[in-house]
Amino acid sequence: MTTLTPVLTRYWDDPQSWTIDTYRRHDGYQALRKALRMEPDQVIQTVKDAGLRGRGGAGFPTGMKWSFIPQGPGPDGTVKPHYLVVNADESEPGTCKDIPLMLATPHALIEGVIIAAYAIRAATAFIYVRGEVVPVLRRLQAAVAQAYEAGYLGRDILGSGFDLELIVHAGAGAYICGEETALLDSLEGRRGQPRLRPPFPAVAGLYACPTVVNNVESIASVPPIILNGTGWFRSMGSEKSPGFTLYSLSGHVARPGQYEAPLGITLRELLGYAGGVRAGHRVKFWTPGGSSTPLFTEEHLDVPLDYEGVMGAGSMLGTKALQIFDETTCVVRAVLRWTEFYAHESCGKCTPCREGTYWLVQLLRRVEEGRGTESDLDKLLDISDSINGKSFCALGDGAASPILSSLKHFREEYIDHLRSGGCPFDPARSTAWA
Ligand code: NAI
Ligand code: SF4
Image (cartoon, rainbow, N blue to C red):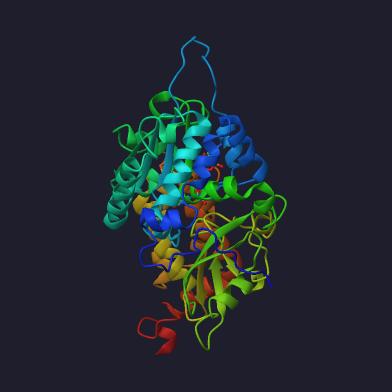
């Protein structure tokens, strides 16, 4: 049985966990002191050696991303400023790890920001947070003010000669602004829409300058790595997916919440810690990494939840948002809800996603209400296929994922809706109950 490894969450139940004093009592800002005694490249190398992978969904190696920042003058002979941008725009359905982290321990994120900015030689950093989550915004702003007062931000940090300004920026609540290049456009004051990549932000990001965009959890994982070393980090998880991470369990679970565990733990083990599926019920389907990742079923309870394990089983680890649905849930209705979300949040820049998500909603609604025919299922597959891999950004692929995977695992349930003239889970609407 894999044991839980509370690192980032270890004192979340302290009612004062968010204050700078509590953070300092738990070794807070010690990693910063250590990092400032290292050369910036040594810090990058440490994060590379640890094997930390981005916790925002894609799992790209964090140290490698930092090392892409060009040093010295560019081809035109000028030296451009570097920026660090923290993507705190968490909004993938089911994902609820960064917001609790920022509420419980904002200084863990701030310390990570200072270390990362030092490593990539950035003098300005931004935390781009969802503006409508006002308590998080206020808590971050208060914590940043405390960090300035304590000499961790501003000029000559802890006498090291390193200067850093940190700005908390409130986004306006568009899911697409979690896509890193749309986020940068939004930060620059424009309408948030994805940019063509390459160039990646590491080469041309904010104001066309080299920029690292990292997720909250990735950055907050840096101080413990600096403090405890790469061997400690690598003693958890697997060779290709080392370390600990936050799994968010939601849905039909006895004790939903954030569970911090080594990468590679299984859902069966996590359910053991979370009190299992609600009494008297069993898992029907679940998402390994938010609604953009192909659905899993009861058959997948023993899949190791690391990047390779989940991919090998046909899905993606994504944000590690494990949404659990028991046998009382209509999969067609769940997929319809997610698709409505993607259609609403589609930024409209590319045709496959803008038009495709609209038509997916129309078809799914018809099937869910039992008004369609079996040929609608083929149309759903066709449209999903026209979106998947053919859209401008990952939102399109994410929209197609639940449809393709639910039709693979639960085609019969779609057909049941057509046969029953409505949702078989809803006695009020299905003629099968008449
Ligand atoms: P990606 O794989 O294209 O890129 C990942 C990161 O690596 C980016 O920062 C990118 O700039 C960098 N990168 C990749 N190749 C590079 C190269 N050759 N040179 C320099 N940098 C490079 O993934 P993407 O589109 O950024 O993110 C998709 C993921 O986001 C999905 O897997 C999904 O799980 C997740 N997601 C998370 C959400 C959340 O709320 N946290 C919301 C929606 C999606
Ligand atoms: Fe916009 Fe969707 Fe195209 Fe992404 S895939 S650029 S969200 S229309």
